Length: 423
Image (tube, helix red, strand yellow):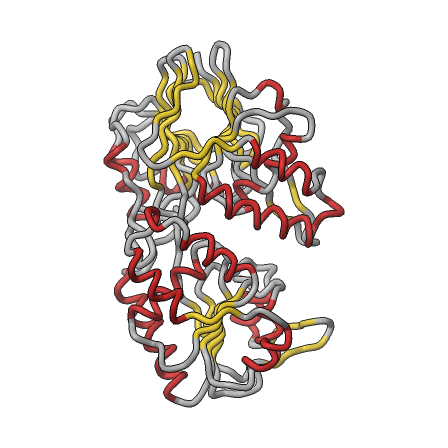
């Protein structure tokens, strides 16, 4: 018998952590954090690192990796992930220490310990864990280097999706679903967007490009607050593919470091030549002095943070907000407690206790890196009817709505961390 324990991600989006236990092995799939309203990290349930035969990291977003260095304080289990993910995770760990170090149980030394234990993998690799148990890594289509993992333990096959996207984008191919057997015993799947459907990608990109073009042609600048990994690169290649290069495209903050790291791994990209071209057209912002110069010229600016919670984006917002020729384009989900949500709903943002009224045009586009409702339904339909589907990384209400579309299938909706599920 194999038991799955939901250490995080049960009945919630984020804090992903799944423990798989067989007769004589335990495998940990992701170990992420959420953040409370005060910006303090919220960790998954505890697991004893010395009990782990393997730790697997699907991708480098903090809600999947942010707690991982804690495992390397007193033990050193082997860590399996793509080399790209390990490099991106390092910049995320270091940024988390910089911003929230007081609340974290690890420091830079634990980050180094974790990275020393990385066994880099590529898509299609099958890792032998001994005793007939194995791990296979498959393209997840979510962000560069992201993986779905097929776990074979005690003869039981379990697919862990991490975060995944079946739809191709300008940056990535869609998840490689057809490398997964249809008759796996269980699928642990994220269902973040089970409550809604994304717009068609071609229409989304066309509307986005038109909004940027109209702003630039009208003499304004465009601010694109973006997530460091995945979204910043997707926007950059989309702009360059559309030929929007008559004004400088600036990249600031951690996004410029992520850009450089990703450029070292063209095998994970849909069109490496387009990405290389986009890198040539982009200009890195290297100092606060350069930043002050950027806001004086007509330009496109890509910078974290994606929800305007901090980072260089707030500096740029303060400087371009007052001119209605400019535009602020929010290209991702905006949490209700974020400045981005405040801007969309009320037209202003409070920064450093001062209210910033935004006269610039404000747009929101759904550049999601997750599968939407229709893709999630197709994903479930791919598997055999006796495959157990376990939904994580979503709200219970959205998960139950999705599950109701498949009344004859064995679907389990996780409600809270701590659940044990037998396979």
